[in-house]
Image (cartoon, helix red, strand yellow):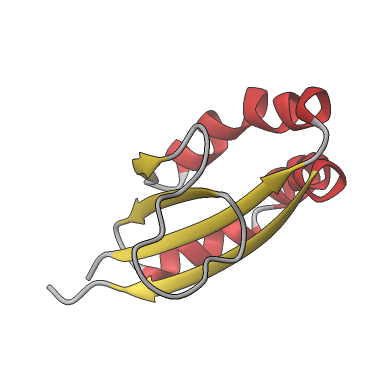
Length: 97
């Protein structure tokens, strides 16, 4: 069953964040990741509160694939650029079919 990773971001250092983006896709795709949706600006919130202005929705073939991506040593090293340039919430959720 597919799994989804939802991210909320607030980027405060665009130049450093670009280093994260530059290495992101090859590692992400290696784990079966598919980028489904992203905002380039602000997320439109229709009810309640949203943690940070930007949103990304990613799909993986399974929760195992998503967890292996998050634990990948190469990704963890790359993610240091994100940690240093943005505030972020990430959630892994299971698909329903």
